[in-house]
Image 1: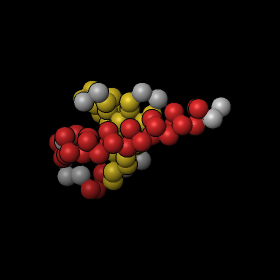
Image 2: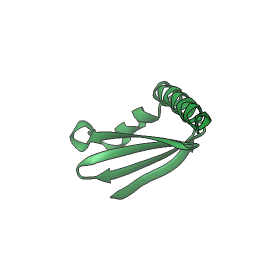
Image 3: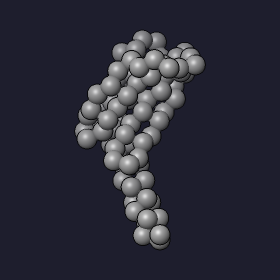
Length: 79
C-alpha cells in the first residue's frame, strides 16, 4: 500500500492510498473512520480525487460520523 497524500480539512483527517488497483480514501474523526474504495479505472487523473474533498461530499461524511459517534456513545452507555 502506498500513501499518496495525508491532510486535514473540516476537522477530518484524510489519507489517500493506492493499493490493489484502487484508491483508498480514508476519513478519520475521533474514534471512528470511514474508507471509500475507488477503482483506479474510474479516475482519469489523481487531481480528479479532489471531488472527494468538496464541501458537499465532506458534509455527507460528517453526517455519517455524527451517526457513528452517537451509536458508539449509545453502546458504551450499555456497558
